[in-house]
Image (cartoon, rainbow, N blue to C red; front, side):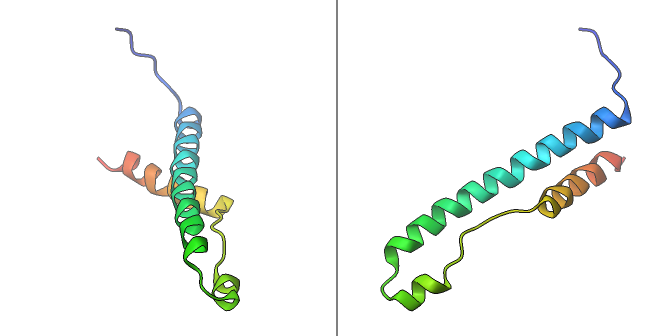
Length: 74
């Protein structure tokens, strides 16, 4: 098996893709929970207080930063 050296840019790109996947999976799980909660709502006020889950680029960057810190640790 040959090992191919990858540079720092490729590592960061791979970590961003992994972080995005992690955050998307978390958002998907939260969305399913949100859908379940909608069916349990009894009043319009309760429905108004529910907010659908979403994620931002900051969530992805934060997850990527945590992964990168792990990579940096010896």
